[in-house]
Length: 163
Image (cartoon, rainbow, N blue to C red; front, side, top):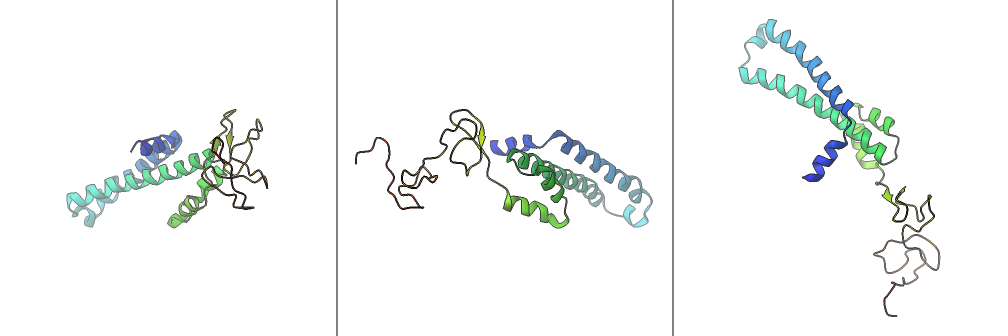
């Protein structure tokens, strides 16, 4: 649950302001106009009127927050954040679905200098320190949990292990 609140704090303030403003601007005319003067809407049960007036702003605010989250998350992942925010506005959630399928992994900080480094980088572009283990035979980047190099098949030597 803590992760949810951390991601919610990622949404920029202008997205919340835009969502609240749109919710008021689009719901208020509904309350003032058709609900007061339309004969059919006046006969609706109170629960239906309250439901319409309360669900519409929630949907508008949630969609605005989702676009804001995509903007901030794409910026954090060093992607084209403005483009992804505009694509998130495409109808039928096509842009939203594409974003969550195609988004890049989060950069990780270099253990030596703290610079954010992409997950595919073997060395830090700031200080040149190795980010991932390197194969001694072919020089390709490896994951710490691998026991053999997937590129050349060389058995990995674990530091401190007896051979």
